[in-house]
Image (tube, rainbow, N blue to C red; front, side, top):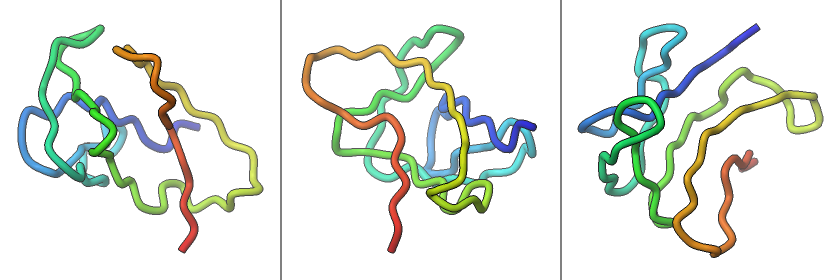
Length: 87
């Protein structure tokens, strides 16, 4: 089932709330602008900011998973939508 849902519509602060649990479970890193989104406000990513969700779901990189994202690219520059970083 659905583990987390980040709307990414927070108006201020570094806390990013999971819509499933209602708790802040991720942290915005860097400075974000709030812009009009597909449904309400959205965070604008500029390549220097990101959201750190920690160990969401507790799965290994070799295990199957899926994700969905609504994005609105404003340039043709390569970018990353989702990544898993091992320490």
